Image: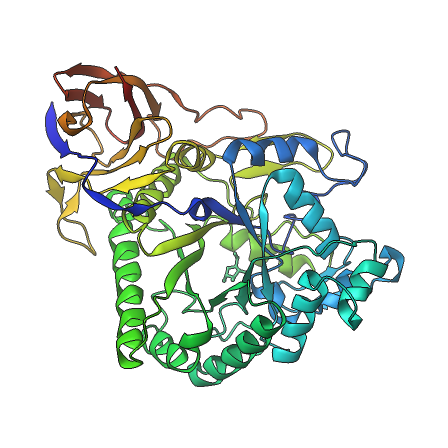
Amino acid sequence: MKRASMILDRDYRIGRIDPRIYGSFIEHLGRAVYGGIYEPGHPMADAQGFRRDVLDFVGRMGVPVVRYPGGNFVSGFHWEDSVGPKELRPKRLDLAWFTTETNEVGLHEFADWASKAGSEVMYAVNLGTRGPENARDIVEYANHPGGSKYSDMRIANGRKEPFGIHLWCLGNEMDGPWQMGQKTAWEYGRIANEAAKMMKWVDPSIELVASGSSSSEMPTFGDWELTMLNECYDNIDYVSLHRYYGNPTNDTPGFLARTMDLDDFIKSVVSICDAVKGKKHSRKQVNLSFDEWNVWYHSNEQDKEIWKRGKWGPALPLLEDVYNFEDALLAGSMLITFLRNADRVRIACLAQLVNVIAPIMTRNGGPCWAQTIFYPFMHASKYGRGTSLRAIVHTPVYDCADYEGVPVIDATATLSEEEDAVTVFCVNRDMSEDFELNLDLRGFGPMRLSSHILLHHDDTKAVNTEDNPMNVAPCAGPGGTVDGGRASVRLPALSWNVLRFTRA
Ligand code: AHR
């Protein structure tokens, strides 16, 4: 058996893990809202029309924050359309996804849903077709106690107490030509700064996320961050990063190595934030909000067909990627990468949550089930809280088309002071060989391996479906031994592993 080793100590720390790195995203897109979280008439719908079976799955994932209402959708969205009596809300053409938005679910309904899901709302404002004025109005509507035009409108619409939305996104992917109201970095930086100032004048307690590049592959990446931050650094708190990966050439080792790119992306944005900080002689640190991440490519052709058959239908089944086992491994490695960068990545949103490039799928009128990527997310969210530890890992490496020196064992660890537990998250990227992982845990005193959770399937393309929802599901791993603070655990070839060490 091949070998790797890991040294951990309670004093080797990266930093506190912000629970918001286990955030997700619901956009008015496809069947995320209509037919996803909301389906009045469904046997599992509650009095407000929210599917209780979906809420149960979201609850299992433990999602502290949900970004809403877009995404590309938000760049043409008028928030006023989505509040007030439902029968008076207009239907609008959504130019982002070529569908018709009925506005049946809006801010009030979504806030109710989020509280049922145990999540906070992270609300995006439209800086595409709109500007600072509308951005400050929605903050007044949502967060001002009363006695002003928009706060009184909220009260008249049935909500006396403010929503108290703490986290706001200043637009979405404003660098992209697909965006309604695309801007240059300077244009965006200026408008983001003015919106930020006015929004914080209305409610100084809020935090703001400026739109970074829509991907590290954008030709403007880097310059976009530098230029726009130069304009708005003082008034914003986070920069957003978005990244989706795919495996269209069926190169599994290369696909699993994509977190090398993810880590580079994060480190580059950190450097740019700190460069602007230095240039401005600022004492403030801007952190990162990785508010769209996932695998996204399976549904691309299907979406073209859907639009060819006809645009403007409500809730077209768009972006319905069916995730396979290797996608779950990459999702696990992406979570490991966020944990390793927990000192700067303070928010991350798995994009998205239900039906649209999602861990949870539903059939209209039918059941819901967990896709493969559901499991690494659920494990990390459940066990990866507390402190991110700086693990020293010795592992063989491999080369692939885009990267050299890819660690075969991709691993990190967290310490929960509350539970006195150490959790190791680990992906074995080896296509055929099991590994023996030797862990040095002597710095923690006597510990025992209380569980080894394993996600593995012999077929990298195995998927979960309505008829076979547990085809790819976690089970107990082979475990190992612990002796005098040294542990040895077997990691099967191509697998996601969660090792829980608790006080002996
Ligand atoms: O999550 C799907 C889309 O991906 C979002 O609307 C957009 O922000 C990104 O391009």
